[in-house]
Amino acid sequence: MFDSLSEKLQGTLAGVRQRGALTEDDINKAMREIRLALLEADVNFKVVKQFTSSVKERALGIEITKQLNPGQQVIKIVNEELTALMGGQSAGITFSPRPPTVILMAGLQGSGKTTATAKLAKLLSEQNGSSVAVAACDVYRPAAVDQLIKVGAQAGATVYERGTDADPVDIAGWALDQAKRDGKDVLIVDTSGRLHVDQALMAELANIKKRVRPHVVLLVVDAMTGQDAVNVAEQFAEVAQFDGVILSKLDGDARGGAALSVKAVTGKPILFASTGEKLGDFEKFHPDRMAQRILGM
Amino acid sequence: TLFEGDLDEETWERLEEALIYADVGAATTAQVVEELEREAEDGNLVGGEALSNRLAELLAQLARTGDDKIDLRPDPTVILVVGVNGTGKTTTIGKLAWHLRNTLQLQVVVGAADTFRAAAVEQLERWGERAGVDVVKGPEGSDPGAVAFDAIARGRERGADVIIIDTAGRLHTQTNLMDELTKVRRVISKQMPDAPHETLMTVDATTGQNGVRQAKLFGEAVGVTGIILTKLDGTAKGGIALAIANELNIPVKLIGIGEQLEDLRPFDPDDFAKALLTA
Ligand SMILES: Nc1nc2c(ncn2[C@@H]2O[C@H](COP(=O)(O)OP(=O)(O)OP(=O)(O)O)[C@@H](O)[C@H]2O)c(=O)[nH]1
Ligand SMILES: Nc1nc2c(ncn2[C@@H]2O[C@H](COP(=O)(O)OP(=O)(O)OP(=O)(O)O)[C@@H](O)[C@H]2O)c(=O)[nH]1
Ligand SMILES: [K+]
Ligand SMILES: [Mg+2]
Ligand SMILES: [Mg+2]
Image (tube, rainbow over all chains, first blue to last red; front, side, top):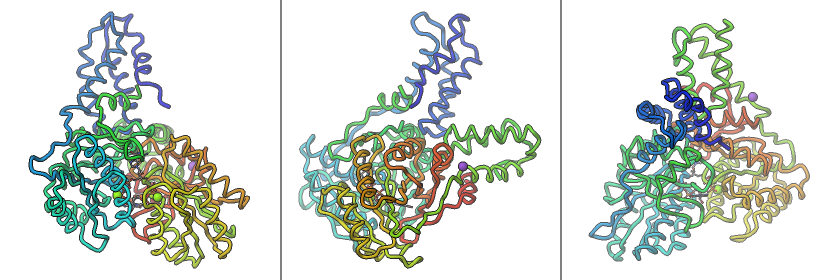
């Protein structure tokens, strides 16, 4: 679908080897290609600006070597910078010494929270042998509770639900009491989808957080998200101070620039990749693979 | 306004950024900027205010593709709703059914052909109750084509004016699931030669450049006749719908602006164009 950036850069910088040095003009041309590739991958344009200026700085220092042609050298820098930006502390879920470890899920409508709740429950119970419960705090979306009852059971988790008449904050608090009483290792709190600009629902999220004092707050972000990803991430970071991100729907062919945008503006790591509708389609996130994917390499 | 004073290099850069920021995408953005630059060079466009006006006009013109009305004359009108996961198919069907029934006093039957996702049928049933329309469902895990068939048969028996078929969300890259959708469409056409009369695809307004691929591949699989642009109540502008209209000639027909029954609107290219560039 996309010409690989690497090919384009080698084309752009083809004449350089004979001349023996990169000029500012060469670099600007290369930066234009990089900029376009990142924008086509949905990286936020402000993030792209910052990124290309740091790549440019390093590229200006390039010395032409025999081993790598200029195109390859620029690609190498882009790759390193991108991997550094995507990576950083490759943390996982840190368990509380005093169980239950409480994990709060948040995100926009339809991003994949409920599915990810069940996937994470399955992963933690299979890999760590934890006993996991999930709490149904979405009282708004029709049949959201039924959905969590089903996928929670498939994941082998206990589902704490009180239908749709109770208040989500109260359900969350009640579920935490249940989890303590039942001696659960982990409680994952599923919440309803909400827009980052919906003040009432964002306040509700803050209140759920206050009530259950989660050890980990996770933002679920759809890999197909465009430029708006930074607005969403900034608002959720402010209201819910999330610790990490689950990137969903990575099984498609979206380049997933949203991952870079979210990481760049919040500094929070992407912890898990959700790669399908089945509960097993869930894995640890690999920053280096994501960097390659964003670049179409 | 976004543009003031003389039209210079910086103006074109700002314009480009604004369009990219709205998810319009590189190709359509370049086309718009080139067109306006040419008009400015020819002396037909002078000053920021003229640019703003002409820009809104041009964007609306690009968004206005083909027939953006839903024709309800076929009796019954069959509408198939498709799209990638979580984009708003089921919710939109609830709102649309309610609108048809309450504003136009039409008889509506809805088919629950998402037999895959956990509680998808229950979700549609709740919407059916809210909208006051009948929902036809099959046993869990049953064939979606069979449910679509039943919904149309039952709809015709009951003299329904409109029959709307919900389908499971799927990524356009999942060949087997796309084939399944083609089969659903074929089942419908066999039963009623000119149906489905509309095949609407939901696109989430927050979607980035992948939206064009989605529309292209769903279009190839089932012949998409219109886009429903959902979740426009957030800060995302839905510019990808402009790229879809411009590059694939598929019109936007409806927009979703919330999660309540009344949060569905006809698409207005002029409003859309104006909103695209306001902060
Ligand atoms: N292909 C694919 N589909 C996914 C993935 N994760 C979730 N989905 C699908 O996306 C749709 C929405 O998922 P949900 O888990 O219901 O999303 P949600 O965030 O809980 O939605 P709301 O509660 O309505 O805000 C469903 O059709 C899921 O099956 C994924 O990684 N890949
Ligand atoms: N804010 C807002 N939310 C919406 C809108 N349309 C749908 N939603 C929400 O988006 C989420 C997903 O909607 P669904 O109708 O379940 O989407 P779907 O395409 O049927 O999902 P799958 O069947 O799982 O593929 C739900 O939480 C809806 O309430 C809209 O216009 N605005
Ligand atoms: K047009
Ligand atoms: Mg949910
Ligand atoms: Mg649905």
